[in-house]
Image 1 (cartoon, rainbow, N blue to C red):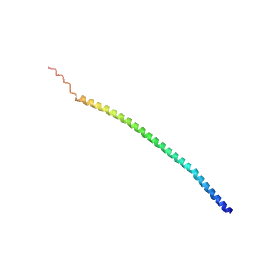
Image 2 (tube, one colour):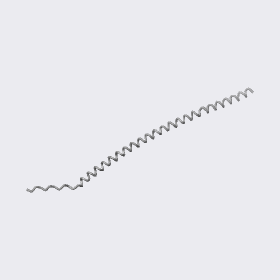
Image 3 (tube, rainbow, N blue to C red):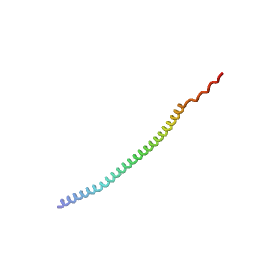
Image 4 (cartoon, one colour):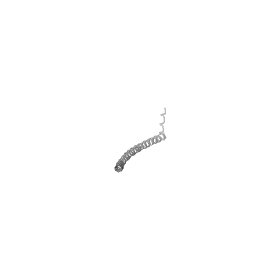
Length: 96
């Protein structure tokens, strides 16, 4: 009977130990998963900020290019108008 009692106590102790280990490991896994998710979210936020910065820079460059194109168009238009203007009449040559 003593052996049987010791076996039951050992089995009960092993079960309690297994439950304790399982209970203690679950929060650690959840905490680790939460930390991983937070790190991934931080990385995604940084990537989104970089994309927004790149878009802002591209928009500024497009605005500058549009302004330069407008200036070039106006300059070309002015040059074309000057080239089409009628020439001033030449002065008659002096008679000899």
